[in-house]
Length: 336
Image (cartoon, rainbow, N blue to C red; front, side, top):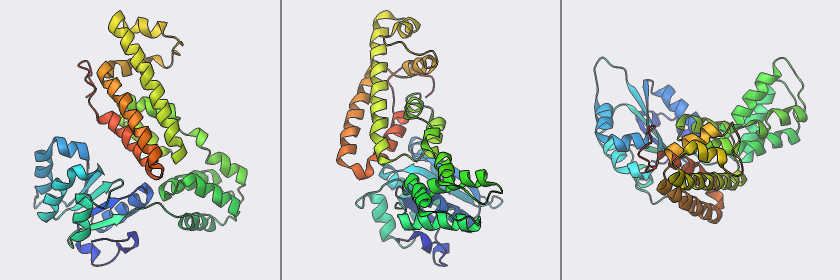
């Protein structure tokens, strides 16, 4: 059953308990999830797709287990793709009573998940496409109206341009403004420009380092705090390529020298002292074979991003998470 986001308050929908959300508008998906949780209260349990695929039996036991003395559960399955289709379909057909919310990125129409959820009357699929400018303007207008602050269209346009078609990003910027306003009743374009300035966000270098260090918590934090644009995609991929080539060069030297600290200290151009712990961790994680494969993947993803510019940002973000998930072929790796 296909639903629009505004239809989830419908009485018929309240009888359903399995929902698939897909698309690139994370802010809208969060709003929908919040509404669904409100109408189906219970204990929240989160799973990532890779967790389910690695421990399928354990997941089935958890989701099928029901106790008379236990409150209802809300299962939120994050970053799902069509790889998990068979498992999801089996769960839905077993008529689990608990609420299940499956969060996907972009799903092609031909995928098993979309076909199943669109054609079945017992489950619901809700697309979360990018917000258009008018809907975002309305959100911003309501915010300033409630604060009793007049605002120019120039300022509104600035906020909308920086929200990247996602109400979630816009809400974060409005929260910043709200904290800044306090009792102020007048706010200038310059003030809002500084408050929402992307230069305060994490740099592309920090994102790449977190991913190459397989720091999932830091990587998620950076991606959620930044409203990257499609133009940022290629900057991030360039930074990725430069850093992976540096790691490759260092690993090749270490294979001959056998002394990591010496190789790092003698590297040209010199590695800044603040970078050395991060570089050392990356060298401990990645093997020569692993980093060579990653460079090949980087070249492939850049070509795909250029050919499919409209989804280049999604491709980049998926790649960043894939870097964390993939094996490195390094027997010394202790973080996996």
